[in-house]
Length: 365
Image: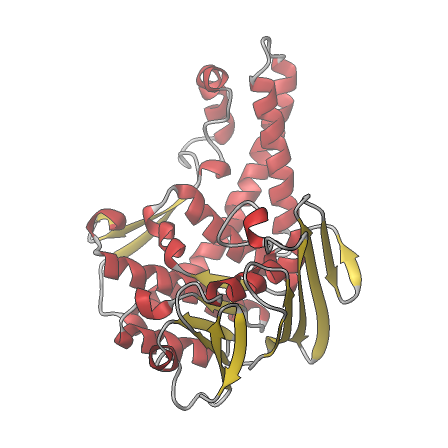
């Protein structure tokens, strides 16, 4: 089992010197809007990803009276306690430490403490552009296929190099051919990893959907980023005049998508807002089940203001699934009764906290 058992936060938004002992099951936080509930989840995300899930820029995350923010946690993982620490400054400096060792990339944090977020922005997974669905797929592949990070980084370098050549006034055909060959080989590897993962994930999504809703008629189809009935090498050659004009590569895994259809139509066009929320929730929960099946570990779930996103019936079903999964879960909401009702009554491993003006106080459940 994997869970965060202790969390210390300093200098992050309005949170005031937070030191918490956490439950391995459900951790329930309630308080008025603006009290610091989402900031607490943001601190956990910073610990697991090195960045916020609310903003791309760092300065809003750091308290106005501080020059940096620091988050420290003790992670229980396979009966071993791992200290994890993250410090970020306004100048962009960072310190990441895992098990008292300095690390220089956020991907090691993500590998150490996998986590998934469900908040109001999560619904861009369906109504946003393809990049959200690529990120969704790549989260799963990254965590179950250890070679994927290296292949993906190599592909990104090949893409960057090819795009750089496309911006030259004169293109050396021989040099472009060399990079095309490199690009195609890596693109095929990226696509193979993604498709193998989706072959396992899509049935899991369908199963979770059957647990949450009676909605039928959903279909998922992976678009590789090019027409798979044709050779990518040939496509790059035929595309070159257009790529030169655009100065970017038009086909490849960086253009991939997971296309979701409902009754043969685009799901985003026909599903109601409530149905969309249920589907996206199912997609996120399915990843946790597949991650557990493949690795034997659980990921952490951060559910921000869940009572405002799902009705009671679906919240209870979500709580039941996460309880069965054994995932450590952090749930926020305004009304304590709404937050408590999300987690099954038989789930004894739970802690509750009142959040007010940046302070967090343990209370009886």
